[in-house]
Length: 364
Image (cartoon, rainbow, N blue to C red):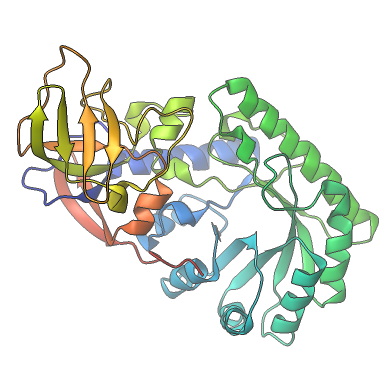
């Protein structure tokens, strides 16, 4: 973030440069159109109806979410096409909520097990709208998802449970790497895995017209092929990790946590009223410390408590004075957003809007 922080801003606060936000959204939408991909951004990064509206207005086909709660929050704000990109395991309460949601919006849900597909079918039997299902595939990150050649078995179970199978999806998370060649390899892994998985469905006579992947780090590695839908999320804001691995520049960072210098205990360090309850506790092998300070790019947040960020300065670098406002780009932007009540929208250093993080804490 390069815009100045507004004078007198109460801190801590999450500040969004709306010009950069709009540019990031437009750039991703234009790139997806140019390469022939449908865009279904992941809203877990922003959890905010105003940003969802911007994405949809720019041409997104719908939105992806991680939880039923996120889907409910966005549905209440008027988003009517949602994909829960997660292998949802339904208990009785979630089953009731998912069925209500399915009656109100066009809904897709991820599955990755026979048992999960059967539970989903039982919960949604007789719904007013048909719920579409995508089988989750592991393309190399080894988190959730089945091996590509097992997708047909899961799809068949979903079909037998009365669900409408429409394709496959994956998350190429191993593309989160400093080496650009690793991001390129992750994108190719994704294509191979999804292509094989889609063929596994088609071999059993099942539909596989949706082949969904994509992430912010692999976005620059797109190429025409089997993948036809992309679900990047962090790109709307970017963060310190994206800076570190080279997928964006400082000018592309739209969100920062604004903090006040509350202590200057020594010439080589100062303390901000930001802590893990604002920045989150995410670390990364490619980021030094707990965030990036645009005004002090060589500084390091070496200590993070609930309400304190300890910043160390290199020798010879003069630090800020008590009471100064300092911007910190979080390591991983999704966690701070989930901790915040609101996002403060600014243009050229002036507050122009405040947006509630509507899906904050919607973790179930």
